[in-house]
Length: 216
Length: 217
Image 1 (cartoon, one colour):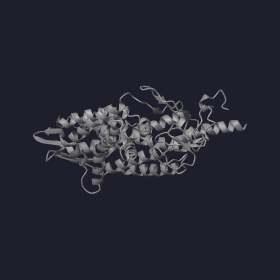
Image 2 (tube, chains in turn orange, blue):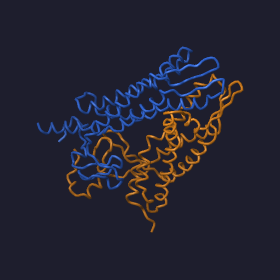
Image 3 (cartoon, one colour):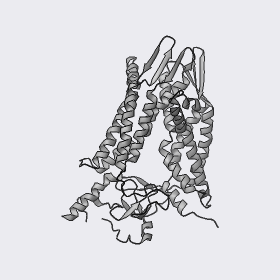
Image 4 (tube, chains in turn brown, red):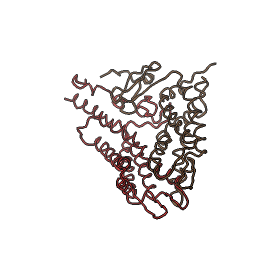
């Protein structure tokens, strides 16, 4: 058993990191850039700093911001069967559940595929831009990052994209399908959203919010 | 302290050391601290109510899954006919027309995975109370899989949304969502909440208990 005898001193707690998944305690050592610190018991990644991660995430987040807006507004699929045509945008798809209690499903779908991803991007930019510029953290940055993390499982843009593929298979033999500009935007969006989440080292952000660097 | 034969038991949990860790930002605090000073999350070493929340959401998820399979998921109208198909009925029909692959995917995504998740969460919740022979690492893996896959069940709802919006070809053909879609979405959401309510640290507490009983000998 590792020795943690001197924990009566509150300052000693700063030298400790605890796995949030299995509660195992470790002596803290900051990994080098590119290294990853993982829990030896349950293999959860605890810290994974990357070089210039902040700048990369901001760049990706800006791209995602424009893509979400574009993908929501432009038509993303068109259908053509025996002269009857229809073009839909992502927003149309979200609002397809209409009438009676179905309206709640419409609102939930719109939130899951457009508004929650959008909100997460904005919160990420709000928290990270001051940190990357070595400025003091933005007001309520802690609360903003907390909300962003809480919303993570409910941001489902990439699942919607795979749903498009399944829907295409289902109607492919029924009618001619065409892809609008938004379809490709959504495809790129999915890759970027996944990249954004894998660049982000949560521990580093919390650490920087606690100990902000200042240029002065 | 720990015997050499069991390296797995060689980990000390924060609870044993009298500290409580933040589950969001991993910072350690003295036991009894109420909120994390770094990120503001409420600190609870082990939440005795967490299992009750798991079961409450689990029951809601199961209840919603029943009408999701009874009511029609899709209402399809073409020139000559109008039909309503349930989740399983739709898959059977696809298999009837020879699309075995797509039928299998639909059955897997909308029947096997939801039922598997119900079973897995129930098993995990029971396993932290009763003795089990399944190793801690395996159960943690099961929990990770459930957490990861949970969100992907929404794909069914998105497919229905896309089809309903797209296939609106006036008199020729139209597809509309059925009542089952709302229950299926609710079932997925409740199952996700149930999995999130589960405190995975309880899986590992048996190691500390084992060590304590060994020390007593």
